[in-house]
Image (cartoon, rainbow over the protein chains, first blue to last red):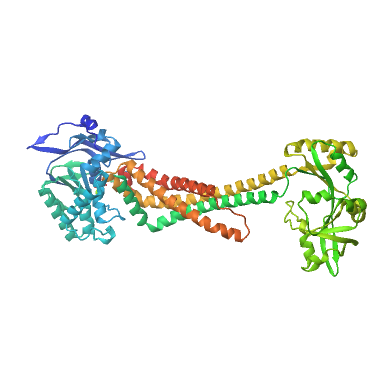
Length: 244
Length: 395
Ligand SMILES: Nc1ncnc2c1ncn2[C@@H]1O[C@H](COP(=O)(O)OP(=O)(O)O)[C@@H](O)[C@H]1O
Ligand SMILES: [Mg+2]
């Protein structure tokens, strides 16, 4: 369970804009990689707010720091400096176990390479986040089956990843990300490994999910993907820009 | 995650990864079977020693010349009589041994012969199966009579052993009348069997067979097990008194109890040696397991990263790998024990004493689980320590 009392200490009221709560509130993020004596500043004073219901893309060329930003926002990595509140929680003071809880309940990840577990079936893969929450197998199976069916994989529940096409694998990954109703969906180049047909499908799914109220941040270097979101920001050499 | 779900996840991983599971299990099987067999062989060896010495009376003390061959100042029948003066000694009789050709009709055999007093027969459980034992009268009158061991009688008569009783045989060219055949006694414990030997009265052997070369040993029986050490002291002082040319130092005094202890000790140290070999085998197979695990942890580190990204706690990942290692090593251990049980009869067929035992099973299982878990879990423990990002990025 989430340690509510402990978290209360980390909590702060998040800014409300037009009656929407602020899911991501990150300020002055810096990430520096130490390469021997050389310092590589991958993120340079990045501030970003994402509000409930947003459908945002971060567009930038390869090596601009997109994945680094997403890993910090997804609580997989910590910044060298800056502040980060996720759904009002101070991520940078959370313990390792609290971070695991945050990743489990608040964030749904979608990776470029899908990152499905190869020995588990599609259904088992989608159930996994719920099982880590301590949910019963029956209930988890029910929810996972529902999401997979919603994404058109009702016939593929028992298939393992290597028995599925890339597009199908990505849909399983999306089902896994949304099955626990997280506050935020984070997708790192979700169409990077897909053909154009599957890319279109994936983007349509994201659009529909957003229409149903999901908050989505997509990281991409693909202008076509960026064209389909409601809000676009640009990243170049570790700096974020509102306009190109 | 609930335990039941965790176990299901582990079961899926084990059964969906047959090659890895097989290789790891193989290491554990080899290790466990080795430990089990080493214990079996060790216990078999000890049992063999005990069995050999069970025929030997632990109150027996043997006095013999310290050097082989001719001795300037040999033991005599007189020494045996003097030993009897000790209150700690119940029985003492001299014994002569020799080797020679024994002839009967057309058959001849090269065999050992012994010159013994009548008490020798009772204290070694030798009784006449046919005919009669050597008695005091034979000894006193120096009757030229002989007893033959059951096996020797067979050899000399080509299987018709009974016909030899009452006939003459020659031992080293001297003629003796066979008065009986002893029962079979098997191995005497000293490595040679009375069943293959011929026996004559002590006085007769001394006079006709060995003459001046007579160099007897004396068999002494202490009054009880507790008086063995006192009896040895008495023997030493008697020898010091009666053998001027060096006293007791010219002789070796051995008691059966110490010999048994020494033999048990050597059987035990053999077991320890085998155990050391087994431990080495286990470590080697453990390193094999670790290698397999390291390879798969490389494969699985990315998975560990994914698991962390979807909310698995470090402890949950550790539990998963630990339980997996325990299951694999337990299954391997049980199979190893079964392999051991199957191998024991094969070893016995090749006349290697081996005894399957509970302690072998336990030791094998304990060692297998300890090495399996240590070597299986350690790489996973390292992987679980990585940050989610490091694990995801792992190449
Ligand atoms: N662990 C690391 N150590 C050193 N440099 C890194 C590390 N991770 C990323 N970088 C560097 O940071 C820069 C940005 O990387 P990344 O965020 O992955 O870019 P993008 O996803 O936009 O292609 C790259 O130049 C990359 O080489
Ligand atoms: Mg990237």
